[in-house]
Image 1 (cartoon, helix red, strand yellow):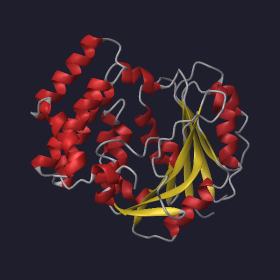
Image 2: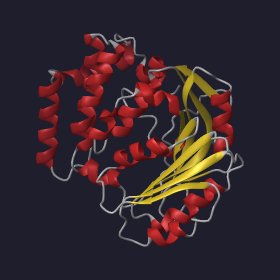
Image 3: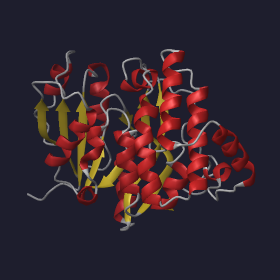
Length: 319
């Protein structure tokens, strides 16, 4: 029996409320050459009951229930990678769901663009009840055509240095073979491992974005993100990702200063910290780590107008 073209990994922890919709949106894809790997990280809700309804599906190759919680979605990703037999991998987060043409459209892009290592779609954000929210995280209304293709390092400079434009694993399909070139340090992070992982893949070739919204990214109170934001992990961990990007992209000091200016501005303007004291500590930590003070915020604002850095900030955020 031949291997499937795509391995789909659903890492789950306490998402029983959303799990059936997620699994059904995978099994009912218009593209059917796939295996499904379901990993449960010792859930305490009734996720096991929901998952066991799918044991007889011929698409499900593995169902694994951890006896002890791993404490990290990125450790679960790695476990899924070790089991995957497909040419491509889709990490379908357990609280999201997909348009039924998601795989068909993204796999086609990868199959027809051999230097492309990663393809992702745009996304709707939805609330816990599935209603589409007004906020648009994609910022690509000016994009022309069904899809946009980018050279990897240029995509990182435009869309990964200032924000992680690949903000949800469920929106991505990537080549399994690229894992041989990606080290496992993404598992060292509790919050920013995805940002580190995606940018490392983007470095290896071209990047394709399907400009249609084919993914539904759910926002709810039990997500890891709000808790991590309150503790400042986006900045405390993110500084290590940025430092690695600076090295990989061989950025000039002037470019680094602009990026740090943006980072400090985001710290200052964030209202998500659990207290002002923590915000102050995170700000001081970033200044000490990078060696650029608050004056870099002014430099960043000027660069948006004059583009000293050649990063084309104003233009790039809408590519």
